[in-house]
Every structure is written in C-alpha cells, then in structure tokens.
Amino acid sequence: MHIRSLLAAAAALALLAAPAFAADYLDGQVKSTDIGGKMVLTDANGMTLYIFDKDEPGVSNCYDDCAVKWPPLFADDAATAEGEFTLVDRTDGTKMWAYKGWPLYYWYEDTAPGDIKGDGVGGVWHLAVE
Image (spheres, rainbow, N blue to C red):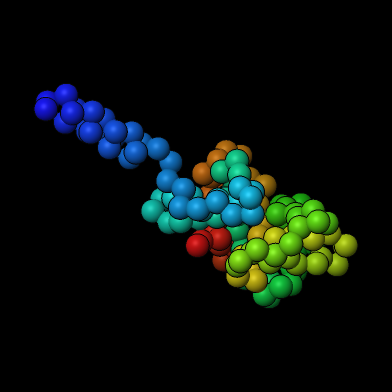
C-alpha cells in the first residue's frame, strides 16, 4: 500500500510540474497556456499573443513600423475560420488570425516562450486571454 501511495503522489507532482494547456486550436497552431494564473493564447511554440485596442473586430490597424514591432499571427491562403478563430484580410493582401474578432499579434521583444513583455505597452496592447 505504501508503494501505491508513493506512486500516486509522484504522479500528482508530475502533473503539477507540467505546463498547463487548456486547449489546442487551429490544429495546434494556437494553444491556451497558463501564464501567471491567466489562460493566455500562445502559438505552438509558446510565444505569447496579444490584442490591440486600436483595432476593431475583424479589422487590423497595425501596419508599417507597428507591424514590425507587433508581427501579426499570419494565416495561409488555405486557412478557414474555426470556432472563435476568424480570419482578417489585411490591406497589404495578407491574412491574419483573430480571436473573437480581435486580430492577434506577437511582440518583438518577447524572445522566449512565456514572455509577456508586451502586456500593457502604450496602454493599448494586452495579452490575448481566453
């Protein structure tokens, strides 16, 4: 019985130590990841995704220098909407992913999975939370 208790405890600890993924979306291209107690959208590599207050649902307003610092989460030409993930047609002819209508971006200063350096930048950039 003692060995079973130890095995159960070890299994429970392993689950606590593992990264928490609530869900995978878009065939694993986007994940919901626990970062600091919030379920944040990331790409498949764990890089944080953000939304921009100056966008409108279904419309990206981040181009030129903005798009250099805040690269869009691009979608390929064959992509189709899936659940709460939709596509935004950008004025430059590209497509990007949106969550609940809000276009999704990366922050160029996030260099490692789980970085959230872009949260709050300029008071208009925020974590894309589930």
